[in-house]
Image (cartoon, rainbow, N blue to C red; front, side):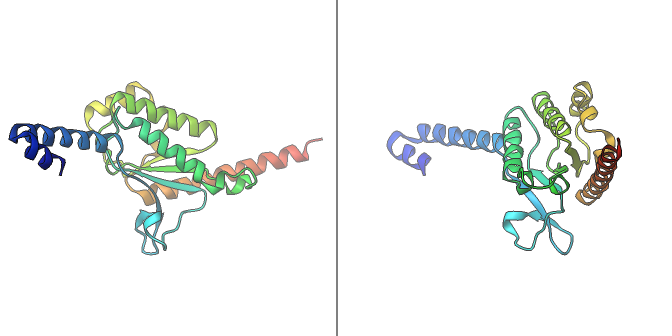
Length: 201
């Protein structure tokens, strides 16, 4: 519409320039703000955006978050902001909720993550370290491999120290199952520690 108006009043050359400029702006907007979604599981086992499917259900104490783009300097802030928003909206983070019911693991669906640049890798490491500090484990799902350069960046920045190999899986189901096991083990350890403290003289 804008390009057509520019062409009408300014000529073909200005119309072409306007069309190219609009295309670039739209591309930048898409690259910096890719779609994201908190996922739930349908009775048939398919993971879908919670907001789009009433029958989808979350796994207790586990959040599944999908990021629909390669991770770059242009969208790293968007990734952190969306994860932060998910945490704020999570009813399990309410201070009155017992620790045994709060979110203990976040699964990041990486099906669309084909590459990660240095800035995004640093952001991912920050996210993982922040979760670890809060006692929340970050898992990566649908991790089918990234390009060699991105893998070298992750190694150099020690991202895999914050997200060890044991938390990286080829599917969401595998990652969620591992998260549930880790969450249950942590709950048992916490209960045992509390019992030991209560039994001490």
